[in-house]
Image 1 (cartoon, helix red, strand yellow):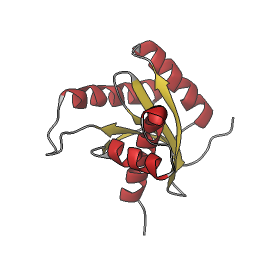
Image 2 (spheres, rainbow, N blue to C red):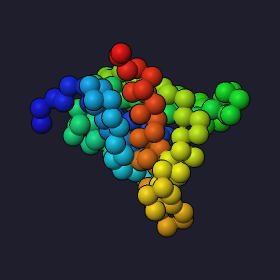
Image 3 (tube, helix red, strand yellow):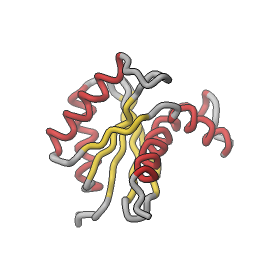
Image 4 (cartoon, rainbow, N blue to C red):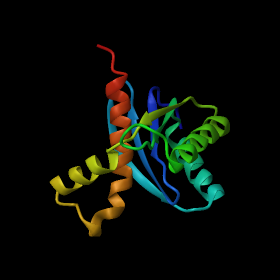
Length: 143
C-alpha cells in the first residue's frame, strides 16, 4: 500500500479497550476507526501493527489520562508506557495529548446522534480517540 503522507493514528488507551481513530494532518480532521478489545499486550500490539501496516501513519497520538486537576494517576503511567512501546516498536513519533473529558465529549456526541447509552457504549472508545486526535490537530493547526 502506498504511503499516506500526513496520516495520523490516535489511541484512547485503556486496560481492556483501546479506541482507535485516524486522520490526516493536512486536512486536520479526525475520524473514529474501531476498538481493540483485549487485555493481552501481545494481542493488542498485533492489532495495532495491523492498523499501522494498513494506514502507514507518519505520527501516532496517545491520549494521556490525568486527574481533573492535571495530576497523574495510575492509568497515566500505563498510558505513557504504552506510548513509549509504540514509538519503540513502530519507529514513528508519538505525541501525548491530555485526554481529560474526552470520554464525556464522546458520549455527548453519541447522544446527539441517537447512539448514546448502554446499547452503544462500545462506540465511545473510537469516538474518544477521535476527540483526542481532533484536539491534537486543533492544537497544531498552522494559521
